[in-house]
Image 1 (cartoon, rainbow, N blue to C red):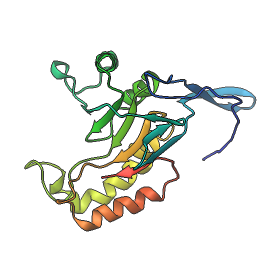
Image 2 (image 1 turned 60 degrees about the horizontal axis):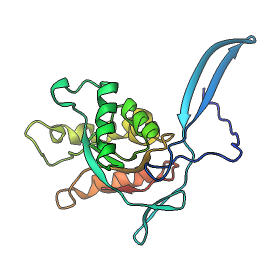
Image 3 (image 1 turned 120 degrees about the vertical axis):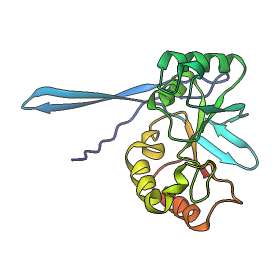
Image 4 (image 1 turned 30 degrees about the vertical axis):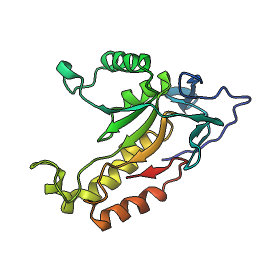
Length: 209
């Protein structure tokens, strides 16, 4: 069952990237009641902001031109390994922020939800990626081995259920969706399929490859 609702926020405090703006966030609380008794609640943090991107101004957030000073952010944490550690990732972002970084390009797979939550809370803009291997290999044992059989079946439910597009659709930090496929290596049909698929999903974020 899917229930939809709408509401208004009067005079909202906008989410914006540091250091010139503040990453203000709200929380939507969904409550399920049965026979008048609360049986479940779910909290969804979200931010309110406007985003525009064009060739003349670049990225504009809440009417302010934002110069992207970003890094490629791989999911591993050095000696701590690849299992996600919230405090370790937070510390990493704190160091990057002190260096003047205000943007993260996720490399090159859907990031942990906790990392997107940190980006929302700490005021980083995010380029969210889905994967970086199609029919042509980058390493001998990567996704290219099963792409023909599993490419569309993986991408569609991944994007539709748990990954890049809907998972971060409420995240204020997500400003763009991407897949890291070099144009000279990309087969034509999957690039067209991805573009067509992404454009069918209601959102206000650009796409690129």
